Length: 137
Image 1 (cartoon, rainbow, N blue to C red):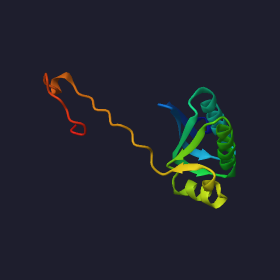
Image 2: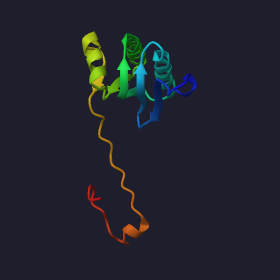
Image 3: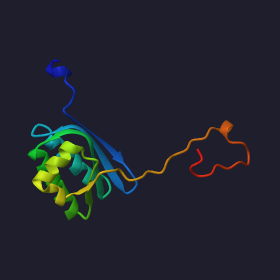
Image 4: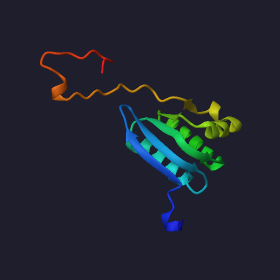
């Protein structure tokens, strides 16, 4: 694969939510990509809510440069009255967090918070005057 056709080493998707913003991160967080993550976290602090969730389920690798970005961002968000939450780090990333002791500093959640399920009904599936019990669909 040529350099022009390589997939990006890190992708970050910003997902605004109710009272928080989630950054869904996929790929490698290392010396070559850490600045991209830092900039995305700073933008999230400036332009979104005070709670920033970092969904790390698809992070395949993280080195000490990535740890430094997480610590810097945690301090910055906390100084501004916010909160940084690491969601679903995989076993490799969790091990890096544990060995470095960073797991005692950061708020880490293994599972995402429950999201209410959206039920879409077509007009033909609901007769006039009928009701649908929660959880029945």
